[in-house]
Image (cartoon, rainbow, N blue to C red; front, side):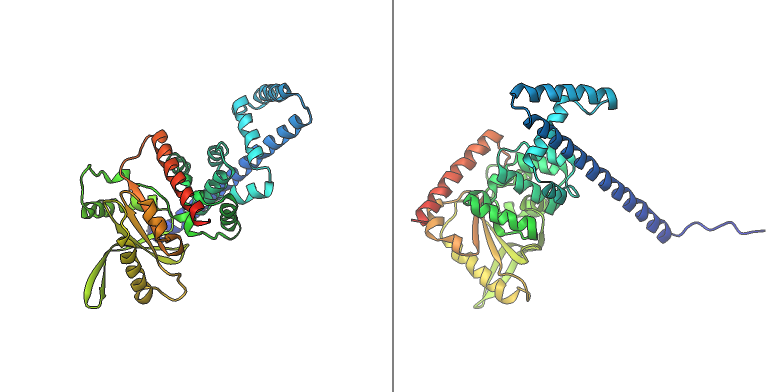
Length: 346
């Protein structure tokens, strides 16, 4: 009697399953690239047609007529609204080479979220971070809704300097600290009540460390809590220690529940010097310190000239504010920061 064939071993099944998954992903990527390229080309072609005719009404007529013809020929998916998305796509990204560097990571749904942003820098910022950090469409929407660009340090720089940093990100994948650090940080997921202590803030962050890492941004790795340092026989403790893979440096975070105070700077600098001496590996950049406070003191921060150090100060909010209120708060912060920069450059 012949033996029944044995069941395939687990390793064989795992290998074949991986081959199938890889093939599916490759097909999905190919379809995405083809579809995105098609939509861009349609938008470009419509734009060319409209530009050849100077009458404003012609553009509306051509899109309406084309939509009807395409729908009759190919069915759903070619509405006037959809065609106008294609036109906007080609207007915002007029260079085929730029689009081709993005569409391997960005789907058409990503592009549709980005093309209606108000500012060229915002478009470039979100497109490049989508590419670098491989955001889902949902994550992209959340980042835009929480006004990530406005909260990132690069938004407060002169436009030309901001463009140079985004250019380096696009061409060299070079991520600067100003593209990483934010102000304020939105920590609404912590569930903190009106009154809490610094240890409560730390424990809440550790309990929701995955969400905290998402708010910090891609590239952060959590290393230690209450990092012990012995200096001149005295014990010191840093609240949280991280490492950033792209920046290639340690990130020290100290948590404060009140306003920023000048003394926090010297304390953080002590931590940074110790970390640089005892914890930094060869080839790594000097550590950066982030002091997270409930509120900043702009004049103290300016007088301390923190821009010339590796110490950064940021505030945090423990509830996600309505977008209009968040806009007003960010505008107030932006105005204050701009005044400090102008005063410093006199």
